[in-house]
Amino acid sequence: MSSQIAEKISRDKADFSNPLIRWIDYRLPIFTFLDHELNTYPTPRNLNYLWNFGSLAGIVLLIMIASGIVLAMHYVPTGDGAFKSVEHIMRDVNYGWLIRYIHTTGASMFFAVVYIHIFRGLYYGSYKAPRELLWWLGVIILLLMMATAFFGYTLPWGQMSFWGATVITNLFSAIPVVGNSIVTWLWGGFTVGDPTLNRFYALHYLLPFLIVAVAGLHLVALHRFGSNNPTGIDTKYEGDTIPFHPYYTVKDLLGFVVLLLVFSWFAFYEPGTLLNPDNYIPANPGATPAHIVPEWYLLPYYAILRSIPNKLVGVVAMLTSILVLFALPWLDTSPVRSGRFRPMFKVFFWVLVADCVLLTYAGGQPPEGTWLIMSRIGAAYYFAHFFLVLPFVARVERPLPLPSSISQAVLPVAGSAKP
Image 1 (cartoon, rainbow, N blue to C red):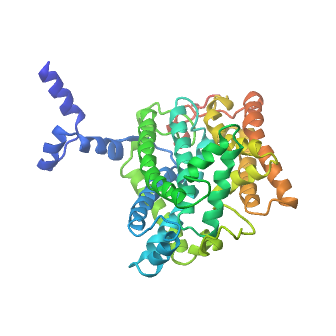
Image 2: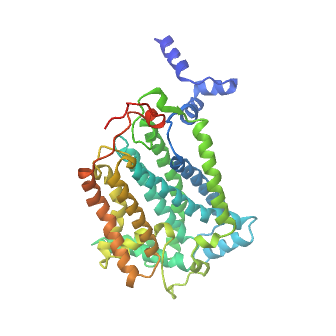
Image 3: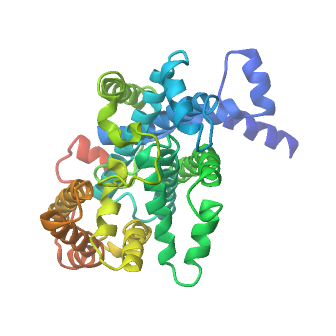
C-alpha cells in the first residue's frame, strides 16, 4: 500500500531540476500546485483578449494593496489630521504624490477592468451551469470592491469625502425600526466625525485582504470546471486545450502592457480627471457642496437611487440592481451559453451596455429635468432586462447551429456542425 501511495505522489508531482525545490516540494507541494495552475493548466485554445481582464484585475488588486500599505504608513485617521496627512503625503513624502496617484488611478482601473470582465461573462454566458458558484464569488468580489471604494473615498476628508459619507450612511435610516440605530452605529456617535473616520479607515485597510481571499476561492472554482470560452462549448477532446504557459502568459503580458500604458497616462498626466475637485477643499460641515456625487464607477447605482422619489424604495432598488446578478443563472434559461450564437440576446446585450453608460452619465448630473427622466428610463430598462427580457428571449429565440467542438470552431472540419 505504501509503495502505491509513493508511486501516486511521484506521478502527481512535477519534475523540478533544482534539488532544493524538489526537497521543499516533496514536503510541501506548493511548487507542484503552482506548476499545474500557472503552467500546465489545460486552457481552451480559443480564448480571446477579453479573457485577459481576469488576470489584469488580480494584478491591479496587488498594485492597490502595495500602494495602500505605503499610504497607510503616513495617513492620520482623525478629523483634524486626515486632510493634512494627505497633503503631507503629496508634498513632503518622497514620491508620495506618485504613490497616491497610483492608488487613486488604480481604483478606477480596477473597476474598469472588473466591469469589462463582468460584461464579458454576461455576453458569453459564464454564469451558466456548472459555473454558478464561480459567478456568485465574482459578484461578492464586486460588492466588496464597492464597499472598499466607498470607505477609501471618505479618507481624504475633503468636502466630497465628508458629505459623501454623510449622504450614503444616511441611506440606512430608510430601514424601518432599526435604520436610525444602524446610522448611529456606523457614525460611532450622532454625527459624522472622528469615530466614523477611524472605522472607515480600518475597514478600508481590511477589505482588500478579504477580496484576495474571495479571489482565491474564485480561482479554485474557475479551475474546477475550467474556463468558459467564446463558443460556450465545454472541452471534449485533447486538441481543444493548450497549456496556460506560454500561450496565455504571453497574451496576458501583452494585455498588462496595454493596461500599464493607460494606467500611466492617467497617473502621470491626468490624475485629476478621476478625482472630484471638491475633495481638494477641507471638510466643512457648515458648507454643503452644490452637487454631491460619488466616483464614476458608482454612478449607475447612484442614478438608480435618485431616480425613485421614495427613499426606502430607492435604497432597495439600488441594492437589487446588484443582487439581481446572483439570480442571473436562473433568469436566463437558454441552453446556449455564448451570445455569439444567440441573435436576439446579442441585440439586447448591447442595449444593456448602452443603458449602463446612460445611467453612469446621468448619475453624474443634477437630479432634475431631462437627466432625472433619463435616469428613470435607464433604471426601468435595467430591471426589465433581467426580469423580463432575458426570460422572454430564452423562450422565443432560435439560436444558431453550434460547432461540435472547440477545435472544429477554430479549425473547421467539414460535416461536423450540428444544431
